[in-house]
Amino acid sequence: MFNFFGKKRSAESAKERLQLVLVHDRTDLTPAQLEALKDELLKAISRYIDIDPEAVQIGLERDGRSQRLVADIPLRNVSRHRAG
Amino acid sequence: MTAQVITVTSGKGGVGKTTAVANLATALALDGRKVVCIDGDIGLRNLDVVMGLENRIVYDIVDVIEGRCKLKQAMIRDKHYPDMYLIPAAQTRDKNAVSPSDMIRICNDLRPDTDFVIIDSPAGIERGFRNAIAAADRVLVVTNPEVSAVRDADRVVGILEAEEKGNPSLILNRLNPILVKNNDMLSAEDVLDLLGIHLIGVVPEDESVIIGSNRGAPVVTDPKSRAGQAFRNIAKRIQGNNVPFMDLDQQSGLWGAIQKLTGRK
Image 1 (cartoon, rainbow over the protein chains, first blue to last red):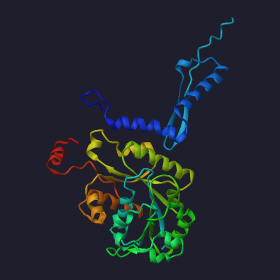
Image 2 (image 1 turned 60 degrees about the horizontal axis):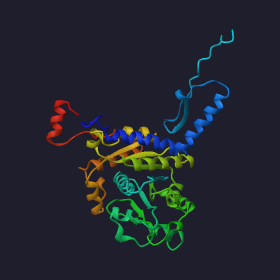
Image 3 (image 1 turned 120 degrees about the vertical axis):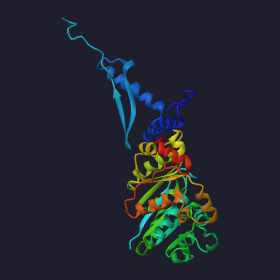
Image 4 (image 1 turned 180 degrees about the horizontal axis):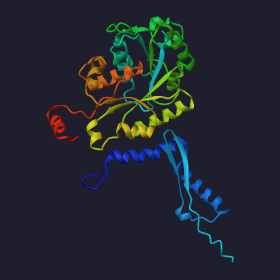
């Protein structure tokens, strides 16, 4: 998939770029809006539960012609015995 | 007979809609079907030259809609085939001269004694496109394996879904098998994966397509053309026949033969 100069073949770039563009076209959501959505989502979740913001992954994924918002939000380990 | 109305559209211009319409119509006519083509691109008439009928136009679709002639009078018969007709677009009018209900009425008038009505949609997603899809029983989306064409095709598919126009089928036009093999062109699999719709045909890039339009004789009439074969196959699939997809990787000449022998593909 890589040529002599270590550059990615163009078909692969085309596909990757299109995957991103189509997800945003289909959802009518700009990358900036998606970022804002993530921030608000994390703020809301943090009010209830301790999460590690660095490890959070939220993004749009395609499944055939439908889109889904997929979030992977690891929780911080809480020691249940801290009080005792 | 009750015609199936098929609209060919694309979003982006220049991907080969008009060529596809002329070729599919001709292939269907060669299979003995009665076909009426409608040029839906008001103001930018083109299907007539590609079909070689430009000198025979008297009336156009706007004349029919505004009552200056009967529908039959605007149907130009292509004398090379037993039963193929073109209803040309108006060249001097704007696209607002036609409405979606006009298109539905014309198609309904054609349905009883026609096998296929094929509508050539203009590029874009505005009035002319809305007119072209209004009467469609089935929509074929044409695209090229290029980022801009695929993106626009996806927009069109989204609109068709929203309008509940059924599941469109994809014609992937102008695929260059050598570029695909070198990973410098999106493959049919890539485009299908991106768009997520049903594939009805892949047409290889073929210079005989240009030679055909130069002469006003669609490439399906050239038995040696690979693109012509691809369009003939799509016409068979439209008629409900199960035709296997062509092996586009197949190389001709000595180098192809050597590659085959050595198993390098």
